[in-house]
Image 1 (cartoon, each protein chain N blue to C red):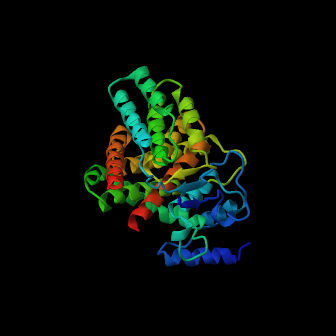
Image 2 (cartoon, rainbow over the protein chains, first blue to last red):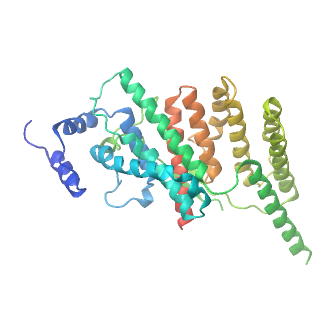
Image 3 (cartoon, chains in turn purple, cyan):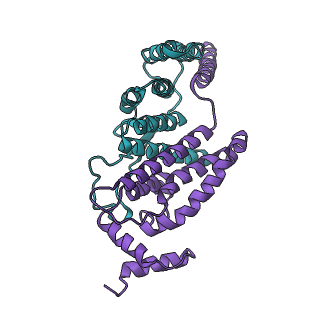
Length: 182
Length: 171
């Protein structure tokens, strides 16, 4: 089929709206192939994008999902920005509120975006060794980003948190007993 | 009353999301969460929380098998009735125990066995940072033991929890 399909035209329009170059033939072939049999990493991108953007926050289209091509192109930029944020994470750990959450959000963006590095290999029933290695690398990067986000979460953990909870609980119990005796 | 938030993320590519069910071996990123509401304090509740804090302190002051035993002992303490806060405390303890266990050769499978039932996709999890941390540790343990689907699902769910926490904070 030499004539562009409606989907191809829609992709071209979306890319133009994003200020991106028109899709290449390879990219269009990839999108058609992915529709028939999504790759493991592409499915995971959809999951990560979905959980990072819960339905109540989505705007625009009903499900707010990204087209494959959008995922592979646009989120590359997000991943780079997120990586930049992670580089500065130690300083931001000291910051309160917004600063800390910026690190978390940045790392989450990396986790979601890192999976979108373009790999234009055609889909196949049995992944090649290279595919498996890429999947493994993707998983490790996602894990590292998720870990960075968790470490940046504000508040005590483990024993410190249990002690803080015990103090707070004891205070509430004392207040309750005091109130009951009145 | 406990407010239950449900977020179900289906596994499929964007265009096929409605048609394709998840396949065996796919990561399961289903996430159900609930908020932990502060309970009415009781003497039993206080005793439990103090016992957990004590278990952590014992673990801090020891290493190796003794540390693991202290954490296991903390997890085995019976939870008093009407103490929703215990869910978070148990997750924190289990996560720490899993981290300790993973440091030993072959411990990643034990860590998975410990955390997986507590964090099963069909369970509602507390909307709390302890959940995100536990899911990341489960993801690490699964990745180390070669269960990539469990690892990917756990990381995705951790990201979901963190995303929801941020939204809660912004409200």
